[in-house]
Image (tube, rainbow, N blue to C red; front, top):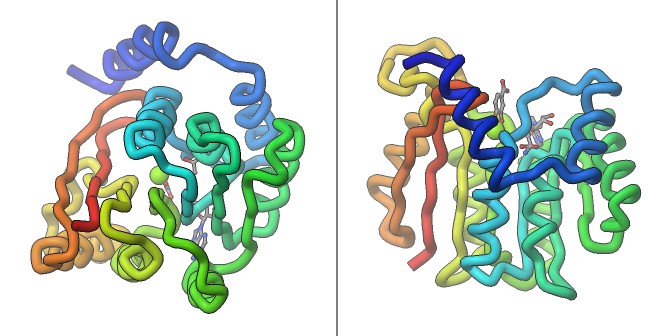
Length: 221
Ligand code: SAH
Ligand code: DHB
Ligand code: MG
């Protein structure tokens, strides 16, 4: 079992369940053309986010870490009329590519990109006293996952769902003495989850065209 077969299986299932769509292809092409790193969710992971949005009946989504907007498009796909996404991005180039992608898809009134480090833009957002968000996708720098999760608890409500990407890291999270800030961020996050009585949570290991990683899922109880 290796990465090659995981990729082939992702391709096989992806062809059937996450068929190539013009807007999604254009989004990935624009990101590649602009030199953005290819670290977006995979098509089947995007479909997973989309299904979660559908299953939870999400109308208001908060994403942390936009990149070129590929995961955002999948989330937008599942929204009802009147639904909206706020997505936070620190890199001006990534934000510009994402905004152009949302414009091209006709979603400029549905998706708002807020430029800046999320630890700066989240308190600003909170000051606006927004209606609670139904679904959170945390996918920015991993060192700050614990803080992003705390913000999600503040900006959510009972029943809100919080999804966190990249919380397995090829098993590197087992290394308590790791010098990798991402690993330490994820480890602090699990310790936090273990003590947090306001959520019920799990984490799922995944393999596929993005290698070996996984998602954490939490619901505010
Ligand atoms: N969710 C995207 C991938 C996001 S990659 C997708 O699946 O399509 C992570 C993104 O987080 C990058 O664009 C990076 O610039 C952004 N990021 C990193 N640190 C950040 C921070 N402190 N605040 C906001 N965004 C940040
Ligand atoms: C990286 C970030 C991601 O969100 C991801 O899914 C994969 C890789 C990264 O920063 O390398
Ligand atoms: Mg990710």
